[in-house]
Image (cartoon, rainbow, N blue to C red; front, side):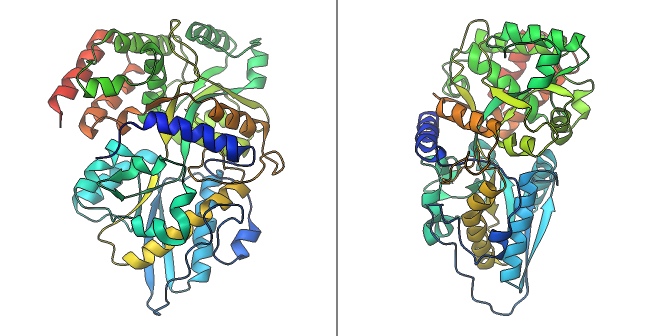
Length: 461
């Protein structure tokens, strides 16, 4: 079983890594040009603590094609540049190997992988989410253990302490994470100023008031793309973290200490519906996918965006660069600690146990994971990375926003994982659909709570 008591260790990992390595470090997703890395021999960042990457696998002369399924579809983002530049570098050094990128958005990839898993045709490398979301694939024997990949060239030591536990079952690590993030509220300073809003909200009541002011000024208050239903769930879970007075609500449901019909959950649904009813979100939110929803903010058409810190690099590469700040999700009805965050151990790279080129795929993944910190740092996308990276953010030209986000990491005092990383897939799907429905129509909050509880009881493991 994956370890479930990780909130504390994750918070410790954030503060320790950020205090020791972010004053000289970075942590996250992706961003910018890299001629040095592209032309260099296969090695990690000289400032990365992992040592050199794997030596090239013996060249048998056999032509090998590796399919790499990924979720970096937006060419404007650092992550897209990172995966393309690293795969091109590897192929240049290994002429007999072709890396084919199967690039999808998050929800498309989840659906496709589920179909592929049913026929046991998982790509050589695919993307999975931690804990409860990846467990069914591991139980079905679809992923190869990656302990040997981690043991090569000190790769394991590059990951933040405790992070790999989210991707581990029965002593084996089955996926390598691309990030370790927190959810924050990004805001457009210019749009706040245009609306006459002097300060960021510290209470949910202030946030609702700001939503109404922005709406009156013709500004979309909160960007979202709820066609990909995880986005609304992630925002909702911030509210539940507050109304519950702290982390652990879902764990209490799992252990039988609480049910979904607990007042904290009903209060969270009520508050979420207040946002919807106030017109906080774009019209037709459920027909907008996550990438398009993010672009509403990144093109300067929305004042706020509640999303993971992995978007920092993409924001800095967009038209609103230099205009954006970030703050903690506010208290709700006087409840909650702003320094408790929704925690987001990243999506992760897993290898098919049935890969026809297992040795070559493992060699490539070792190269990819070993070089990822250097590439992300150079692309100004290292805030929220799950691996340790040394380097001075300011000296490297990182934005004020990136430094702001790094400071928020240092304030983490705990938090919760996303709903679908905690509950089994069947219960999670009911939850995702239920929250998505709130964008379409107002529903009695007690009925929403009952729907969740019935789904949980029907799908207990």
